[in-house]
Image (tube, rainbow, N blue to C red; front, side, top):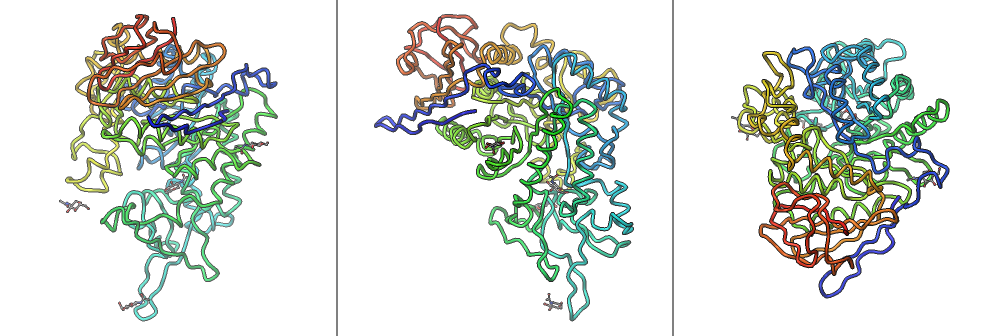
Length: 589
Ligand SMILES: *[C@@H]1O[C@H](CO)[C@@H](O)[C@H](O)[C@H]1NC(C)=O
Ligand SMILES: *[C@@H]1O[C@H](CO)[C@@H](O)[C@H](O)[C@H]1NC(C)=O
Ligand SMILES: *[C@@H]1O[C@H](CO)[C@@H](O)[C@H](O)[C@H]1NC(C)=O
Ligand SMILES: *[C@@H]1O[C@H](CO)[C@@H](O)[C@H](O)[C@H]1NC(C)=O
């Protein structure tokens, strides 16, 4: 969608101008309907079902709870919602270990509940996206049990290996030094089969063997099953580790070398994952799945289904998920380029550079996307600064392309400190009392804060699976809805702005003023939009009117709640004063 025409016009003030000429014409000009392009410039929202809304008061969020809150998502302007896994699971990794890909985990509800959810999403125009966890199953999945027993057709469903035997001692050891993302060897000995199996996550999450075409066939059936139930696409979990390097002619697998990134030989960071990550075959599977979705769409009509892919990879790898020029892949390869590289000390120039690197890397017929939080990270407010909640929402919603919000970031939810005793995340429990907090994903998974009533309106029962934040009386949907200046109202105003004139696809041009990152977005049907974000630590006054060739008088579309600015206020763009940590969106009068 974006053609980066020119970049880096550098003068003595180190100005950078990047023009992104976007598709400004209505989609119909290209013979495409809304059904083809619905996701473009979209506002996506991630729900962690366990934590969103608990309808039956058992302490755990559920599908009926989500159904009861769909109107909220509609109201704030969400186009598509993706659910973390809701499939049948022993819950070793809260649903990322699946024992049946076509059943609903009973604590979340039933297939009938799911159908009701899909119908309601359709009625409200909020597209439903399911998490798809293709690369491993639970060790309680029937395929694994059959594979352990070498049942015909299932012998090679998983990655099995006899290991290495020391010729002198006869001692057996794992086939390679590969490490699990959750610490320790990625190989687990199976007594029954007398072989090791590969598990890149928990021991109870054996990796499927994608070199076996039967595995791919089965997974394709799973995708079709859910498409037939009315979902609009899938978010594919941890895609880069789908394939491992193939064994050599003697059946041996190579060891990975130390990465130099950490000293702990049991931790995943100790090794450079050149044999277990980003293997070329992985992209072909994504292209194949996209073709499956396209075929389903061609045969059945309705909306073009989408793929969102999760990959914490470098930019060159992320871009390959879009397609290879001949075959198309994921419409939304999650952009973690920003998330992974910014911290509290990042400078305005760092943001500008990371953003423009991504914009330039996006293929011309594709869209950028922006994401700063998810169920695997600490909360944006706690990680990057509570005063900057609005600044980051302004950034994510005013850049070209698609924006993705993790539930709760729109109201500024913060991490909840969970003690070692109360921790439930396996990634934390695999460490120890001293170090667990850095690994724990529990702090960002606490129940969603709906209102100021008991348990923040998450449920009316006597327990919640993780504690409720102590700040829920101020930070919640109901309170923020009633305040004229609140994180939620800034967020809603931003989505409204995006929808009013296709902000997702407007041109982009930027300028740094010291620690203030500014950009202009414009298209034919939109008055110019000027965004200014103060990443510095002091109040600063700048002249955006002269820089962007717009009038002196500018109108505030929205601004950080912490600022002195009100929506609709007219200000002087030649002397725009921004407090530190504040963002503002302006337009011409
Ligand atoms: C086999 O075991 C012996 C005794 O522990 C050890 O010295 C030797 O290095 C091992 N050989 C290999 C190939 O690991
Ligand atoms: C595959 O599973 C392993 C662990 O089981 C995990 O590391 C990897 O990210 C998974 N990949 C996919 C595509 O699910
Ligand atoms: C998508 O497929 C078309 C051909 O069907 C191709 O022209 C285009 O380059 C592909 N996009 C990507 C990103 O590979
Ligand atoms: C906890 O783990 C860290 C890192 O593995 C280690 O250095 C430390 O000694 C451990 N502490 C305890 C109390 O086991």
